[in-house]
Length: 319
Image 1 (spheres, rainbow, N blue to C red):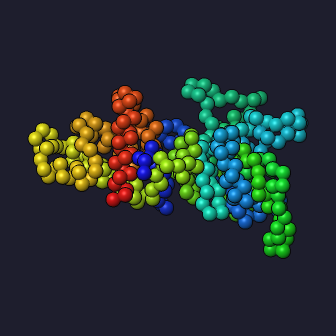
Image 2: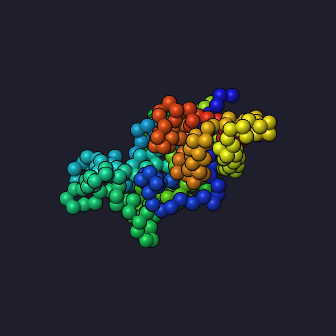
């Protein structure tokens, strides 16, 4: 088995996220986009298989908007209203009959005032303020949007009533509204829901969980592995000179399958492990490389150290 370049970690059931931007300034939101078997207010349901088959389109070209206004024609101008577009997805996962989505809400550039029109609010800021800053927060409910493919509808009977079930669709948007289109689905959350990651990477990490270079770990296994690697690295950092070459220390290193870095690198690894445990750094080679670059390492050295750290965590998870 090849060594992983990314780790997907299931969150503990009691994981909580602060109702604010994360340390990197990103505005992350999480929600259940659809649940197969749930009939909406218009008497339709969307098959999970249909959305799942279109997840790559959603991840690569999809967006979030307010009430589908970015795609539907205005009653005044007859044209869509792109000013209602507020964000984009970063992660799409599936858990049974449910499709979960994580994404990022847009923010204006540093020192740049958010664009507005005729004194009206900039919708990304308006949306974010309503769920993250005002008290009590507003409840925005998701509704998927896209183009139904030819032959993409089947008529089924649910509780004695005929229902249109969408089985094939080009899915490229989710609209947020204050009235729920799907009464059984919860509102948009600032905390991870379902099997979403605490922080979604822009490449849609969870959608690639089946790739050979990605290792999927339960939270307990990840936390245990990080803790053990951290203890090993700390032990190595405390050993110098002849002490580092004693039979006992060498046997311990061999048994733990973790190479002994020099003291400076060991301290960096410990710092990175703490950042992983606290959620400040994602468990991916790219994210760890960026972390080590910020700590002053060159690109090549940072990549090597990031790969080694992921390898050590992965190896401990298998023991």
